[in-house]
Image 1 (cartoon, one colour):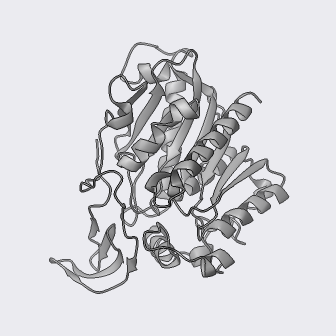
Image 2: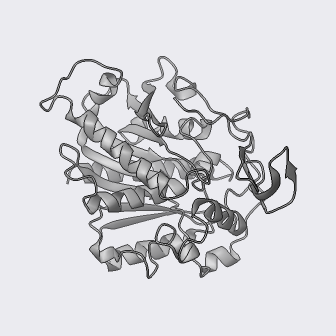
Length: 366
């Protein structure tokens, strides 16, 4: 199973300084650094990519999923050809089967992992606090695998989930490495979820599924999408992008956002940041009215540079007749729920988990 190796950092320390640097230093035999987000990633002139020690990878049995914790977790291969894998979570003692969340981590499409300690900590809470099982997808990263690779991997994850749901529906139900998890899942109550770039993946996967790109999903049924601070962009700047001050430990500045998009989009992509993969509200994107989307919950951080873009998405979804709920969290910025980089991060994270639980419960019963 492919792993992206990360250096050690004690949990609870300030995670990363996310400051972009373009051009400069020479790498050992790889030429100048042409793109860099300090502490996270360097891209050299010859295409060589370095992902730097930032947040530690942890095993599936670490911390909140250790023996006796009440939450079970295991890692599984999703697609051997691409190296995509997932970390599965489920409550150990749920009285009945629970809805399934397919989760995509953040990281600007360029960094991050389902094994990062911050995601493991966050997602290990969902079985108890949101009443669900979780499939946390580790997808391919840019710039080695530029968009739409991450969206394709999201579709592969749903295809794998459909295969799991098929067990017991005319196929062998023999025990295997996923039987423990499958037996706890309500596959007719599936939710697509992600934060930042992962929320963008969840949105695009929901749109593709609505357009029938995987054909029939039965026995799966996608009940909703949960978009946490979705990472979208555009050539025109929003007010929050231009004026929201960002502290030194902010996870996302405007310059960092631009750097991620340069690495994620293919060079010369038509429209630049108005490409539909970046800006779903651009002229070149499919009209929202034509997309069969499930009900959506959008979680917005008040101090996030993406705040106005997230709110604009909510307005556009409502105008197009979609079912959308919006929750805004005061006093915190981008990725607060995993990086804990604001003094209100913990209480706001608990508020978010309560909103997710309510959304999942309401949509599961509809």
